[in-house]
Image 1 (cartoon, helix red, strand yellow):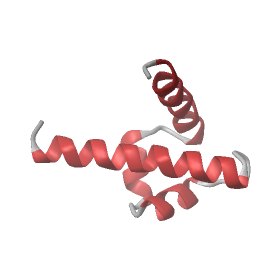
Image 2 (cartoon, rainbow, N blue to C red):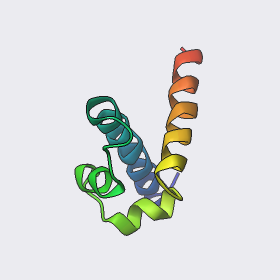
Image 3 (cartoon, rainbow, N blue to C red):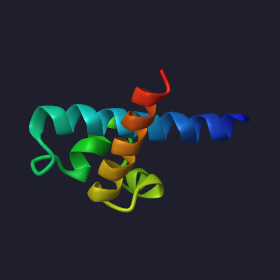
Amino acid sequence: MNKLELKKKEKKESLLSTAFDLFTKMGFNKTSISDIAKNAGVGKGTFYLYFRDKYDIRNKLIAHKSDELFTV
């Protein structure tokens, strides 16, 4: 994996992790895309490079967490 691919993976993981933290603390409806991007340390535009909308990150987060749970 080259540096660019590694950076992309790190940003996506950061967004997923941040979304999980915010969704569990504030709730899905009270968390905005701006909240996720700001807390992940990326611009709002960067969020949209990886996810279509808040529902998309929620669905990918569910799949991501399920995968972690069942591959232990």
